[in-house]
Amino acid sequence: MKRTGFAKADCPVARALDAIGDWWSLLIVRDAFDGLRRFGDFQKNLGIAKGMLTARLRTLVELGVLEQVAASDGSAYQEYVLTKRGHDLFPIVVSLRQWGEAHLYARGEPHSVLLDPAGQAVGQLVLPSKGGKPLVWSDTKVKKVAVRKR
Amino acid sequence: MKRTGFAKADCPVARALDAIGDWWSLLIVRDAFDGLRRFGDFQKNLGIAKGMLTARLRTLVELGVLEQVAASDGSAYQEYVLTKRGHDLFPIVVSLRQWGEAHLYARGEPHSVLLDPAGQAVGQLVLPSKGGKPLVWSDTKVKKVAVRKR
DNA sequence: CGAACTGGTCTTAAAATAGGACTAGACAGT
DNA sequence: ACTGTCTAGTCCTATTTTAAGACCAGTTCG
Image (cartoon, rainbow over all chains, first blue to last red; front, side, top):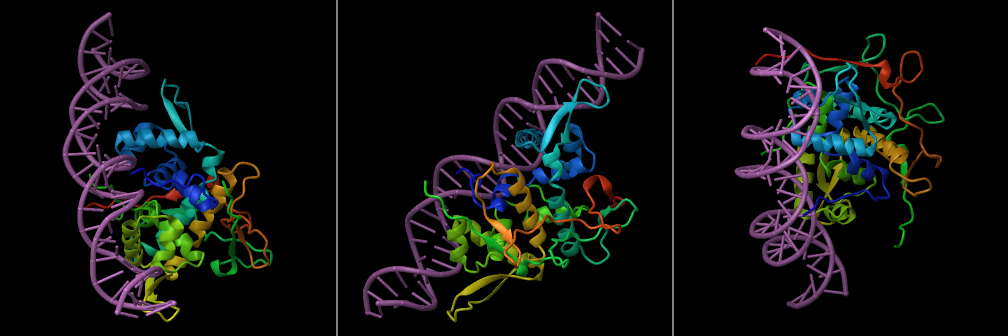
């Protein structure tokens, strides 16, 4: 049966996952953050089937995460670049990176690292509060919206 | 063919997506953050097929994101609760929420909201820098690790 | 005790994915 | 201008994954 969708959910987490929560979209976006722009670059770097890549790029463009522009090298080809909406995915990619670094590597196992302008590893993402102390899960609660009748 | 895996990737983003980047895992985790604990609660709230839920809960337990504990109400049943590793997923869920809120709702369309202890909507996740100004994508670069020969 | 609830397993049909063959247009070398 | 290669796809097929529901054993409720 058709995969369950959450495009109409009241929860933004569900909608976000519906849009970009598949196996490939965020890896394509990660590669775009790393500077990849061409179809063939994504395809070679990810090892993704070309049909899959075509479909994913199309939905990312439809979502407004990527846009197709004329190639920067003057050739007649197209390139895919991140839009504003795509750049806003940065915290998602960073949070995934930080969780992966913390929990998915053995001691001493090498992995890529995100550096700040000075070449230092970046710190942890924080959720600021008025008081200055970062909020953690137990500080927060979700306000649900009223269920709308149809 | 079998879905491509990234469990051995050098990139923590890829490993994280390999572990929890499917259609259901993060929604289950979101529900766990919202206080759900029982198989039936997850199943009813998500509308997920029971077989899928069984499989997802099993892999989340194997990953150490959830653990099974005796039910808190004294019954003979089990409950699933977040571990430390599970709680560390909070920034991922929050970043998805914030992107969804910003880009996936029409003006005025209602959605659930994350509140701080004072009942105020929380602020944006930030990536702190030494200088105090939050880092954005264009400030950062990824240091790749040397490709290891096998 | 019997009924309903809980937490699953198993089966089946439909959809998504991986992988590769194939193709049209662009480009580079001769 | 001709040939070969590169680019960016499309299309096809085999396999895997998912959705949905039937079924079932142990637990709790009345």
